[in-house]
Amino acid sequence: MINTAQDHGNIADALTTQVVEVLRAVEKKNEDAQKTEMQFFQKLLSDRDRVYDERLKCKQKVVDFVYLEVYE
Image 1 (cartoon, helix red, strand yellow):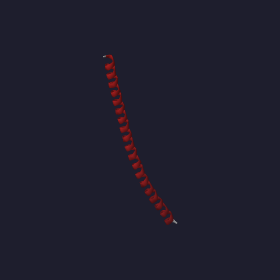
Image 2 (cartoon, one colour):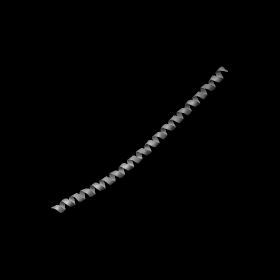
Image 3 (cartoon, one colour):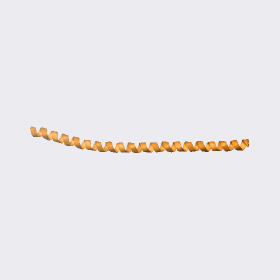
């Protein structure tokens, strides 16, 4: 009976260790993916802001040009 209980405890410990190791690997992979996604998101935001700034500058150049053509 004691051996059965010890075997049960050993199997439970082994199973727990195997499951925990797999979950740790999945957690690390998930964290890495999340970091990559956040970096990509930040790049998209900076690209968007850059494009909007360029668009506003070009628009202002057009307005200035039209203003000069009309009033000069």
